[in-house]
Length: 253
Ligand code: 13P
Image 1 (cartoon, protein in one colour):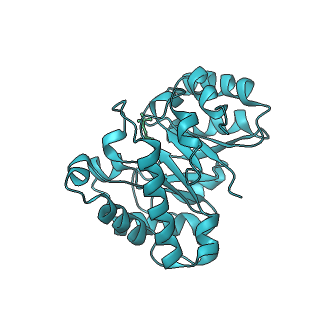
Image 2 (image 1 turned 90 degrees about the vertical axis):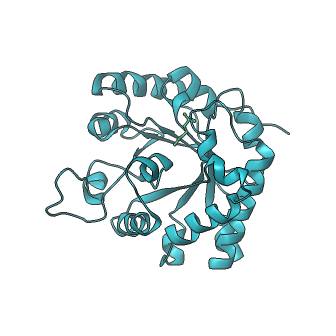
């Protein structure tokens, strides 16, 4: 059985003080939750303080990006060892905003994935098509490319540490989430890719999150789908009430 994983990607939001206020409210609102793995991904500047605040709780720490070397002359970059040192368990890699605004391609993303794994971090690999690609019926081709090339040269052991987040770009920050049926279909497609790259057992063990306009209003319908193992939440994770509601979604059936 795959344990659901619900993560908040705070993106470029929250001062250290604001981050601490938010995480304190999350600690209070979620302390009894055991059946969902909870992750918060603050900006780099707040990782240390948020990490201290959640140390020993049921909330895990994640970063939003990482560089592909452990150390050296890479001005302005942050290494996976540094993230591990701050207590990060997860790191988001290949978010569509990084692909779009910072020119990240699959080759770079794969290097980040592999270096993170070798430093003991679990990558949350983001994949997903843009609106024009979906309109052209190319969504599976694009997602196949992101998954296969993002996960090149990973052992089975490595694969078990990876989380995949299917985030259709047209659903991010738009208020228009994918329908649970469309997300389910794409998650199945991704699981079949993993099965063909490795084997069915491994594919059945990897968690696949959905991301894009997840809110308290649509979480239960999304989580009711067998292939949706959690969500990656942007905007609605910036507010304690809404993120608490999302983590505490009502189970259907
Ligand atoms: P929104 O939840 O704001 O649509 O963002 C989704 C996202 O990009 C999470 O990584």
